[in-house]
Image (cartoon, rainbow, N blue to C red; front, side, top):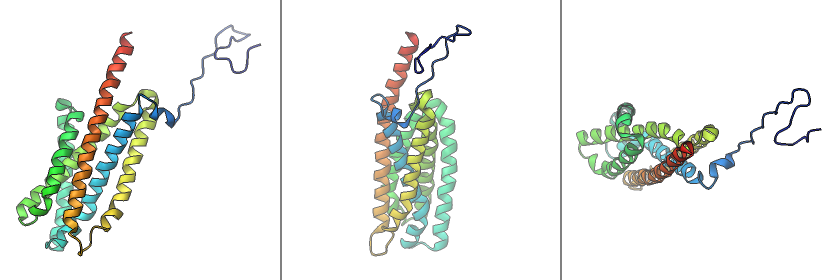
Amino acid sequence: MCPARSKACYSASSGNVEPRQPPPLGYRLLFTAGQATRTVSLALALFLIMFSFYFITSWTPVLLTQSGFSEKDGAAGGVLLNLGGMLGALLMGLSANRFGCARLLPFFLLVNAVLMTLMVPATHLAWLAVTMGVSSGLLLYGAIAGLFTLAPQGFATAIRTRGVGFVLATGRVGAILSPPRGRSFARPSLDSAATVHVLRGQSATGGAVDLALAHTGMKHFTQHLGTTVST
């Protein structure tokens, strides 16, 4: 008689080997020795990007108004951000096949960090403020689209669903925390515009560095897969 929990058991009637049941897969597999760096890096990168993105979409119109622009100009600034974002997603899609998302993402984020530190001085010139707003939306939307494409590549097939779900959920946490955090800076008594834009620049820079670590981890992961297949 076959043991109830044996890995392989011969059927008495047919003599065939019953298929081995795969072990249950849990979220703990996302944090094993070879996978933890990629999981945490991708999740933290999306958290910072989404945090920065919702700072822009939620508070830029208010900050423009506090900087001396009319409410109509503030609303127009929000529209320009989304227009730039649409162009950024298209640009990432067209450029990814040629240059690769892993190369474009740090570039988008680092350039955006530089723009954020220049956003406040640019408000003194209308055309420069418009250019900065469109460019910022373009770079952040492009980074989000690229990271959504890059995230599945950081996980093996067996854990890809859980891995991508964990990364997206962490990014959503950043989106939820960002608008309430921005409210504490949007006070006339503070130099809120400068504070918020510098903070956004720091978040975007951190996302770029973190993403570079994730890319390094994925290179080793790809090499490991190639070695496994060849052997």
